[in-house]
Amino acid sequence: MKRLNFCLLAACTALVLACSDEPATAGMGPLSAVIQESDDGGWRVKNSDGGITMTNATEPGAIRYYYVNARAAEEGRREVSVDVTLLQSEPGSQAGLLYGFQENPKSYFLFTVGGNGMASLHAMDSTGFHEKTAFSLGTSVTDRITLTIRERGNEIALLVNGTEKASLGNDSLGRGAVGVVASHLGSYRFDSFSIQVDGRAAGQAINSRPNAPTTAAANNGLQHHPATNHSGAGEPAPIKYFVTMDARTGMASSRIPLPADWTQLTDNKEFTYEGPNKIRVSAAGGATFQFTNNPDMAQMFQMQGTTNQPPMPIEAITQRFFMPIAEQTGRKLTRTYELPQLARKSLQDSSQYYSAMPQQLDAKSYALEWTDNQGMSYVSIVNINIAYSQPSSYWILMSQYLEAPHEHFPAARDALINGLINAQTNPQWLALRNQQDRARSQASSRQHVARMNSLRAAGNAAAETGRIYSEISDINHQGYMNRDQMNSAGHQRTINAIGDRTVIANPETGNRYNVQSGSNQYWVNQDERYLGSDNPNYDPRLDPGMNQQEWIEYEEVQ
Image 1: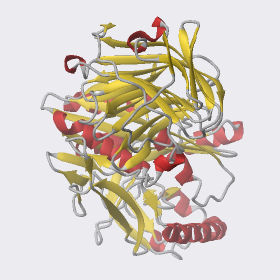
Image 2: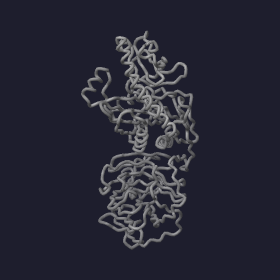
Image 3: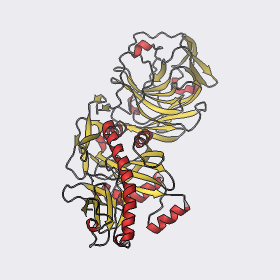
Image 4: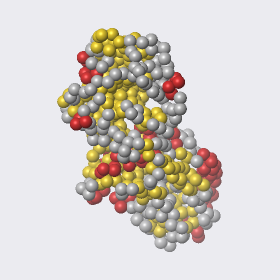
């Protein structure tokens, strides 16, 4: 993740401010008694028509914040809000809410509007300063923007102009001082700072003084640790990189940072990871859909029996594919929210893979959270990757989920999402796969011509008894289906419901594919094409149009 160029205060034994006797306007709520007009040569703080302006024209990277302490009885139930306007800014400028401030050891969160047009949440702790999430504002930074942090116990929701954009949960949240913050060169206006508890103004807090201006030297030794997880005590917990191997090439294809006390499962058909306290993570699975706006291609879809299915909004996906299984398993949907950082990661990864046709890519990621009556919570991570092309396009819907007891769920959920965002693809493996995909695409075109000529010579006999549905170009990295670890139970029923899927397995190796259902026999060749046939007497190994390839009959297992 990109680290902000903040110059953080390493130690401060004396705070000296050139303050006037004029307090800030009452429009800053409980901060009104804390913030005073000042001009110390770095930051200039002024009352301004019901709010305050903070201006830094001389010290790049300097940060200034003001805060009020919280009452213990109110923690976990607060809603903290402020209106922010970036009057003048640069790409590195930030202004917004200071949250969860702890003095010793110093730690806090910053939920800010940036001069780059993004809203972001950053965390400062003993491991350094790192981004937790970020998303586009969708409006000009010179507009007045309302930032809100809403506590739900040890979880927080991040709202922009009243709309929830993201959430975060672990045992270090739901407590600590709150206030406002500005950083880097710029001029920032703050209005209407408030702290609400259960819809009412919070009690009188203990005032705390702002920090002094910082210098670049204060940032010495600050390191970037994007994969840090947090334990239940709020301290950084160790992480471990778990490696995924590609059985076909014998190479490591990727690695993912997860808590070190989690275990990777290699022979489990239902789950890929498990942790202490009954934490389990499923394999990923999903389906591919085709769509087109081309009338001729739409007619061809109809003739072939292919559904023309444009990308669906998350609400429709939830209702169609997840709710039926949730009703069967007694799970209740509690909330849905975007994962913009994961979507950016998915889009970046997709752009690195070989494509035989020019494509315009897009990606969206969501989290669906569920609970049941057995004390368990669940999160389904849903990724939607769209490839626009001509004359037809496609989109891939992928899902995997985590389950954990209620009390351990927030930390486990955050660890999984953090791991997915920071997962790394092996560049050597990627180069090899792209080379193989390119060669396979070229060979496929040549084989298609030869196969069509053979079929015509044979009077289209094979075409009447067997039909190739689609190509599995790369099971591991493109995620059309999972070779080795297809999970079952409620999640797999959901995956199979997406596009009428079924699971087939190699009777010799046990390798599994998730494919289009509806056939009596399934054959897979060395180029990872699969063929579905309804004729029990058809064998592609005896078909002159097919037998130049190696075919293995797979068994349907679900």
